[in-house]
Image (cartoon, rainbow, N blue to C red; front, side, top):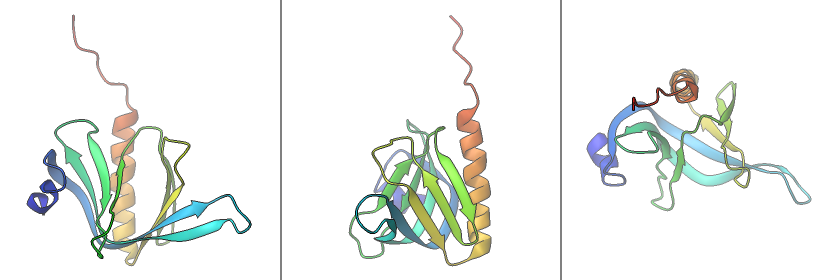
Length: 131
């Protein structure tokens, strides 16, 4: 699995968590009909650890071979998890809030737990190198 993803990003060293089928949504907040819209991205989803920065990425590989969804995990992410969904707000206020729909609730729970643990680690103060 890592070898296939390394073609996309050679710095990937480990798949932290995987879900076989996820559908991406984006929150449309402007215009006459605000609400959730399908992002036309669906397929397997991976959270990967990398050798370089950013240390972790969420990758949703699009089944139709068009653009994938790739977001670098950041300590400022805000999560909201509900039955079959994980919603997250990235650190960049110009980007839309994302929603991930999971076919399998047990996979969603597993991804949520791993995502929460990784974000907690990113939020911890990092030790400064000794001078």
